[in-house]
Amino acid sequence: MPRPSAPLLPPVFHILLALSSEDLHGLGIATAVEDASGGTVELGPGTLYRSLKEMVRQGALIEVSSPQGTDPRRKYYRSTDLGRELLREEAARLARIVDLARERKVLEGPTS
Amino acid sequence: MPRPSAPLLPPVFHILLALSSEDLHGLGIATAVEDASGGTVELGPGTLYRSLKEMVRQGALIEVSSPQGTDPRRKYYRSTDLGRELLREEAARLARIVDLARERKVLEGPTS
DNA sequence: CGTGATTCATCCGACGTGGATATATCCATA
DNA sequence: TATGGATATATCCACGTCGGATGAATCACG
Image (tube, rainbow over all chains, first blue to last red; front, side, top):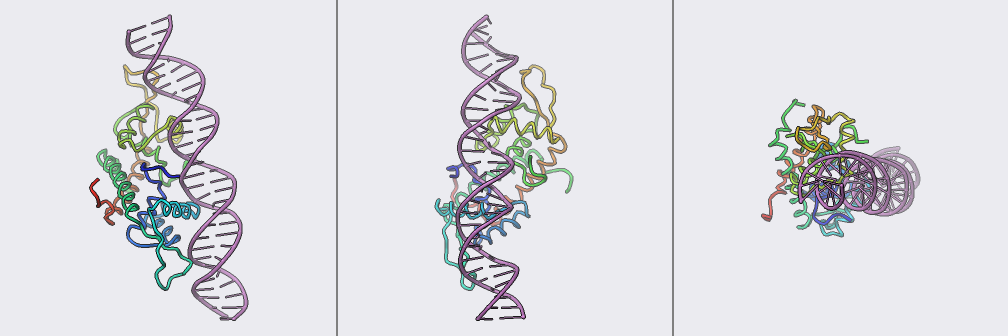
């Protein structure tokens, strides 16, 4: 069971971020997360479906009817107000950390 | 054993960030991380000392002599070039994610 | 001195992760 | 329309990480 408010679990955060712009189904979320992060974030099926189930139970996501013409096996998900709120808080938390890193000039250095 | 390049473990990242501005000893790092993150990141002794040992082994940190007048039991650590490089990469990775969140306007919403 | 606080360190239970695996069903193609 | 590969959801399990509990040494202070 995830923690109440504290830092969002990374998979949950990335799922919410993927769903911030459009409804997606399970595997669609996985690939969206994968290439939105440049391949640095991996979402195995175990983590994926476990997270989705838990997020629906928690009220961060709802399942919506599949768009016409798509594989009927797909289950599409949409972020709720709660989901957007959780995402916003976590993004703000990360933003503060990145700002701190900027203040300390840790982002400067060898141009990779 | 940590993964090769992939996302830094959060504790390692926060330790490197804490050491980016000054040399600190174990417990000093823990408190620095705690309040730099506004209390959202906790560093238990288990995670702390395990991480420090591993980071020294890996070459991300070195132990330095304690400043004069401080508790001699304290072991002070300093970030190495490798440590700064790892920190820079991870900070850049987080910055990309935050930027993506900004593009999607997820940071806007109820003024908390 | 001696008592409580500080510091480092290790151990262990709890939990999250992602791959392996299972099952069903869709789609392409012949 | 039959068949095989791809797709999709779902569960299970081994592994790794996390942080608290605990221990031991030593410091500061009355």
